[in-house]
Image (cartoon, rainbow, N blue to C red; front, top):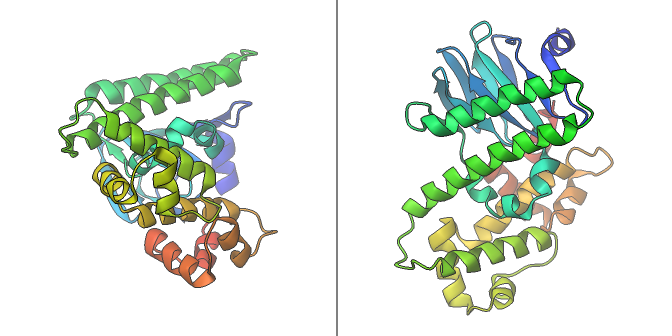
Length: 281
């Protein structure tokens, strides 16, 4: 049944960008994959659960499930939504996007009633992807990726703006964010190694005390917690490879013990690494 559904509704570009606009099953069990899935709601009454939160979408809303996040379809009216999927490599190939993943990955529901310009842009880009994939254009891969990046840039700007509203720094120059942004890039590139707050502070040229304060002010999360989230996300990617056992995934992701890994993984995903691996589809 599942394969028949996919064959009927999916259009796939050479870049592994998938679009489905033929409706879909009314329900679909909890699962995750190594791709982002953005859903444009076409009919009221759509209900999805993403990362244990239930979202009820109205027509024109956009729901965003990011790579490795567990999500499920609770209720989908006939032809009630259209979605695109694109591989995590699209995100991972941009250090800028990786550096703001903390904000992107908690953004799951963009309401048309509150953000009409943003939802309209996403809707237009999704339909443009369908047109490109169906056109037989020899440059369809690049054009589809360009549409996806246009969406990601718009969502990134939105998420950063929302975060800025909650940061009271008195710094109009943006210097504080520049330090934090540089730190996030460094963490992303070195999270698999033994990494400390002191090392990152030294890299960006700040004292450990001031860096800790500044980092939490902008990221709304302590450095150790942030690093654990990055490592858990990387471990989730490694769990895709059956050649790695769970212990190997833990150490390759940068954890120093399986105990710390198992606790962090359960706290962040709500599942043990073993149970989480079984939900991959």
